[in-house]
Amino acid sequence: MEKKNIDWANLDFSYRPTNMRYVANWKDGKWDEGGLTADDKVVISECAGVLQYSQSCFEGLKAYTTEKGQIVIFRPDLNASRMADSCRRLEMPVFPEDKWVDAVVQTVRANADYVPPYGTGATLYIRPYMFGSGPVIGVKPASEYQFRVFTTPVGPYFKGGAKPITICVSDFDRAAPHGTGHIKAGLNYAMSLHAIMVAHENGFAENMYLDAATRTNVEETGGANFIFITKDGKLVTPKSSTILPSITRRSLMYVAKEYLGMEVEERTVPFAEVSEMAECGLCGTAAVISPVGKIVDHGKEICLPSGMEEMGPVTRKLYDTLTGIQMGRLEAPKGWIKVIE
Figure 1 (tube, helix red, strand yellow):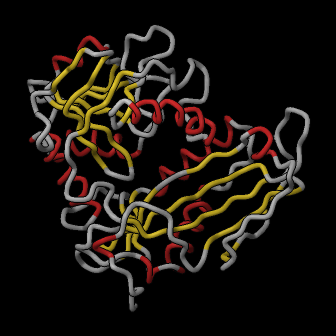
Figure 2 (cartoon, one colour; figure 1 turned 90 degrees about the horizontal axis):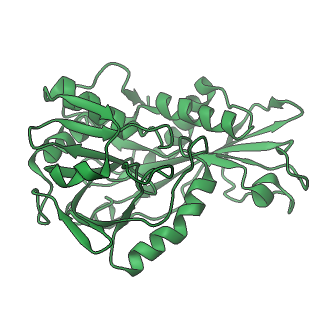
């Protein structure tokens, strides 16, 4: 298939509409057949549940061109399962997980000419989302919902390589115990916008959120999970009921143990331990791993031994292995790669 005439090597990470997107509607207690459309406009009531009470959730994943020229998606079944969990928590109807994956496949296939060629550093970002479309004025779930999937070609999250960033310990709380921190709800991200702007204004790339109950344990950032490498080579990642279960983090834990032979610990990580770590990274779909070189706690600097010049050596191995699996350079575990025929 002939690709679009796009300067793939110079794409940034921003929205560009593609030809087709998927739409399905839930009304009178059931989903319609759903299907592809060229219309990129959403028309809803001024009193829609999403506008009045922020009833929405979303996912993010990517399609790649592998070394062999195949178009693939990385672990979409886990995104489908996570959105189902988000919907249940927000009192929204679950879009069947098999149909969810099929909707993503249909959308990617319909926009195959927008999937960047192998070796360009670019990918096709996929955004499935659902929102309350029916009117609601009293505080209650909406009566109608819309599920959509769109795609957009994006460049690498970091131009010129992933340089270590400086982050700060936030004065804000990201999520309360028994709240919505474990789901991918739009409202969580809206609540983080002020905190990230404050961080940026003070010269920091991101926030480190501590647990809201005791403010002593590491949680996550506004949009990524933490991984740490100890001085004796273990991968440690925070365990908490109030952080989002990152698919990238789960994949890195498997890669560390099964591909690199590392010891892996998912446990509570007291902030007091951070100064003893050798490496630190933020993991998520967009960048895979964003290395952290410095953490500032109200003027007190914690400088990771890996430094501010480049990704730490163990983090680099993790990054290269996972991206090698995604791009087809390394054999993937069974079920991780969905090939678009």
